[in-house]
Amino acid sequence: MAKSRVQFICQNCGSVHQRWAGKCDACGEWNTLVEEGTSGGIGSGPANTRNARKGRPVVLTTLSGDIEDAPRIISGIGELDRATGGGFVRGSALLVGGDPGIGKSTLLTQAAAALASQGHRIVYVSGEEAVAQIRLRAQRLGVASAPVELAAETNVEDILATIADGKRPDLVILDSIQTLWTDLADSAPGTVTQVRAAAQAMIRYAKSTGAAIVLVGHVTKEGQIAGPRVVEHMVDAVLYFEGEGGHHYRILRTVKNRFGPTDEIGVFEMSDKGLREVANPSELFLGERHAKSPGAAVFAGMEGTRPVLVEIQALVAPSSLGTPRRAVVGWDGARLSMILAVLEAHCGVRFGSHDVYLNVAGGYRISEPAADLAVAAALVSSLTGLALPADCVYFGEISLSGAVRPVAHAQQRLKEAEKLGFGSAVLPLGSEELVGANGSGGIGAGAFQPTELADLVARIAGSRRSRVDEQD
Image 1 (cartoon, one colour):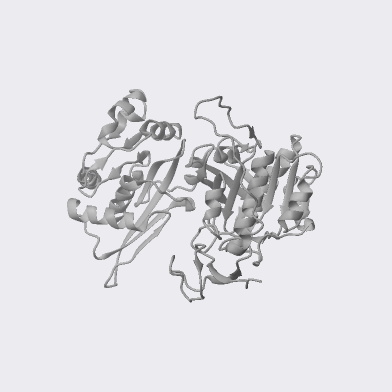
Image 2 (tube, helix red, strand yellow; image 1 turned 90 degrees about the vertical axis):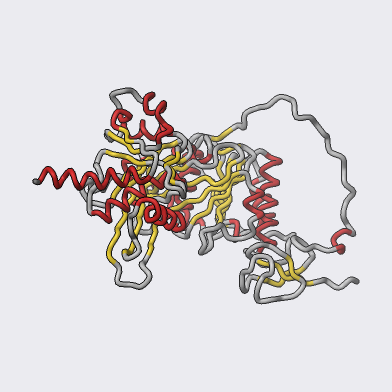
């Protein structure tokens, strides 16, 4: 009888090692190698090939043929349907990740209750909570009367046998994938082998039966879904549920979607009665705005097909340190360093003896470079002590040469700003036709379009001289 081999698998990247080491050679992480057998899962050797069946031929087809739109299950929760691309696709697998306590289970409980009330068969399987705990949450959310079928189980084979009994479920929610284990793998639950094998079994069931599967995933300290990254490649959509501990809102962000856009967001507000949809996120992020304070600029951004207005706050203060401090919340720190360098090199604005703090109001996170112009305006406003116009929005990308470059969706940004009462805008020069399309009497009539960042700095500094002249 052949001796069973033992291998060591990295719990971060899934690479296989023949012997234990303190550091993974593939990803560089420390203390992530775990001993696992080779009888199943990753690293299976030739011993598993004795009982391997002979392959059968599959039918090959062509690229041309009839195409049907993917049938979807609409939950009725508008923000959730927006993030998923129009609802849950039958036969698809969706992975939802987020920090502990952010509201993943609350959101899925509300979605399960909404779908079950429409007549769909919904199965909610929890590996972390007992049935009584789920019932308590449902009572708090006011959805205890919804006909959702509950179970507390972690074995994949038992779950598949349970949901196969009776009518095929329309949606199966598994909370969470890290707690599931299968008899096909010998390792402990939560390891790379078990997570991969359990996810593979559930996805195979979804594809073969047409039921939609939602997997809940834990998040690491770096903000990534725990476990092997191969799980994100296996599923059809990956959603991240984000939010700051000091704020009551939550953002459901799409990072992968085979059946829809990959940059949509859904905005929710957390309350004691559960998650409430926020139909107009711009009003939420601008609700507590102080218009007359220096260092505040309103950025007109885009999240997928949705324009979002958010306030960018900057504080430039004299520093007593040899190396001034740079702190950023909600934006890329490297991008801030670049904007500061452009302001110093091409505009003559010196930040070398000042601490710089940048914050995106409301805990919102910006990833697009169109926020460069708003950040630069907020920095100059804070340094000079001059408040920017309260009815002005900013968007545009800044190059290393100091030029202001055009960005996409200028017309949608301006329309959203005009709807919220803004009367002027600062935007790149390449958007004349889009500004004109808004109408001569709209926000485009008061638009300022600088070609260089120095033009904007001169305009802000010129407002100080005009105020001095008025006082004289």
